[in-house]
Amino acid sequence: MPGVAEAVRPVVERIDRRAPGARDFGLRFWDGSEVPPPPTADDELTLVVRDPVALAYALRQPNELGFGRAWVTGALDVDGDLERGLALRDRFGGLRLSAADRLAALRAVARLGGVRLRGPAVPASEAPVGRGRRHSLDRDRVAVRHHYDVSNAFYRMVLGPTMVYSCAYFSSPDDTLEVAQTRKLETICRKLRLRARDRLLDIGCGWGTLVLHAAREHGARAVGVTLSQPQAELARERIRAAGLSDRCEIRVADYREVDDGPYDKVSSVGMYEHVGRAQLGEYAGRVTRLLREGGLFLNHGIVRAQPRLWDKHSFIARYVFPDGELHPVGAVVDAMEQAGLEVRDDEALREHYALTLRRWVANLAANRDAAIAEAGTERERVWRLYMTGSAVAFEAGDISVHQVLAAKPGAPHELPLAREALLAGVD
Image: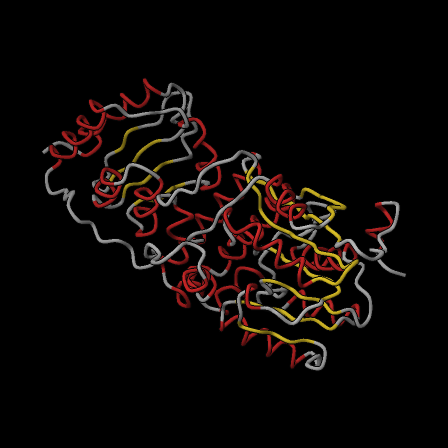
């Protein structure tokens, strides 16, 4: 029986011809055989196929889902810098395998013997395809909890002591994550012109960090909503420990279930990505109805630089954010304006999120054994791949993150004339 590398070499050569110069890495297989990198490639990067099941995943689903399943199970790995390896993806962007290419791949696998193409098990950490109407209350609860109910301890290892799961705000690449996250919280409060006794609604409050900051540093009365019971329980514990139970409240609820307005200010940080394009109008409309006249709304969220349809076969959709959707920032602004809000400020933080994600990846690496013990090997691999890949996407400009500030007409909004005064906060 030939070595694996010898059997698959003709297929690799076909791909090299179709995408010349793209393969900047070598290949190593479970039997120890290797296909070396091209002469001009970096020999420090190797794609490792540790188990034949990786080929079964890739051939049955020749897309992100198939390769993602192989990665999550550990059948596929990278020897070298994972971020650098993922950054090569654009080189293969125009590659389309013909029927002859696929047939050649199947023949190569058949020559190996012992490689089963039928029925490789779906990894346990993969989210099931949602039932019911997308973005209905019940389906959204299931989708959100798949991601956020992993383990509070796991998230603490990744996010650090601030427990903030959104883009930080750096003044220098040398800032610590904690300093940058605290700056982000303060920036949000300043843009909202948060004052003592203002009533703040934080949609998608996570573990309550912004709620705590708004109450402790600005004297606000803050209500946070989340769909995750474990998040809410930890947020309430943190509020009690801070002695702020008289000014902070955490609810397990969907934003569509909040009906106790008016609020002076509303924040939504890293949440609207779960809303869906078809529901953006309802989302903006609900916020508008909850705001008092003259009130302010800050939406902080990831946007797509280029329009792209939701893909149920993407790695992110099946392992990270089921039913999550990214929209161009223009769609977000349009939804706000259609709901009657006046957009007053927009700030792009794309480079900040790449820095944030690299800090999270470093935290995960430093706590890998403990993270695996807490959440399992598959979850650790999912988070490592998704956060590293996201850093690459932000760095490349495929996606960005915007803070959009809007006001509800009908009363003075009290925003200053100069932007530097906005960032300086309320006297």
